[in-house]
Length: 480
Image 1 (cartoon, rainbow, N blue to C red):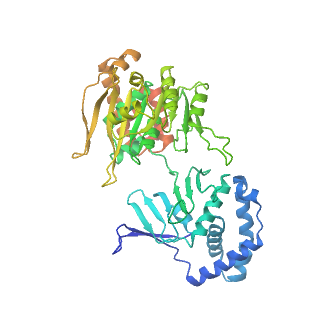
Image 2: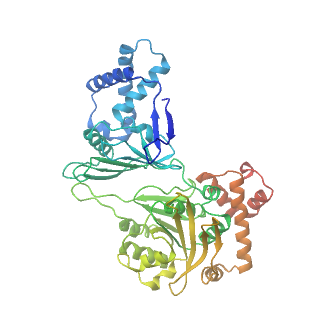
């Protein structure tokens, strides 16, 4: 469908407007299409199984499309093949989807779509421009409720007056949260968090300035030698993105298990990786699979690396630290604004981990988002000393917008020397090599999870060949 998107500032509005227009459809055409849609619903009989079963979604569309073509020929006898296809897509979107909200769902630059009530326009969160008001308006509260119910059916969930809250994961990875009045006082709501079409890589982070190559090479070195790490930060600072980037550095000969509430981690397809998701209880309160359940189960699966979406509770943290003490490398996120606050959060209720256990975490990486500009940066890279205290190694200088050395290592380098046998001089050599590889990734614009993973795997398995390619500035196609 030919869609025009325009973002502009409007007098009297305090946020920019995100304007959607389907230029080919006039008001008269839209009126006739709505008449066709009503007739379509009467003629096509869909069973509940057809709607719920994702494997039958193609057949559902096929049923609609066959009937639509007949109806379009009836109302638009002069329509050519291209127009027929356009009108069919429009009607399927209106009938089986969320109407014009589906247009927003197809914009890769949008991270969030929010319906607050039928009295105000739909809001979106744009990667570059932040929150924007759209020109799309929901017809009434019943329409929002209909969308919520339809989404719930597709994922085997329900939303009713008795259960007015719904949190669900779509098959494509999108996360849906819905509420009904009077729980949400102003109206029925839907908040759709979109699953990124492309996962962040270390190349992306370096290019946009979120991290520099020196800091990234230090993180890579620690991950290579199986040192556990926590990624902390506030809301929307890029914690999960950084966790995904850490995963870029995993060797190809190890078993990895990821545990998440919502599928966000994406690793190269050639890695030995088992992704696992929690499950919420059914309406009767049965069938829940918690993060703790998956964490305990993962220890029986002989993992080399365990990735955990977020630490929230004491039991999860205890199992996590137990996993580290039994020889597993663990990577997780936690909500905290700096290294000191991360340690306070871990050692205070509700997590309440004994301070003596903290040195099991070798590295803390803190992400930051400037609330005024929206810019995300790696704020601190720190280690935890043998006494369980924080030691900041590198910190972002906001005025100069670059990382600076904040302190000398007391435990990280010593641990590397103790368990790998490398000297400090060899460590510096490794860091320089990795920095060269990272700069080469950026220069050659290698920025997909599989491409970056291939380079990292090549670095581990054929180190001399990979460095020869980097030093001679060859292309990715030269990697055999």
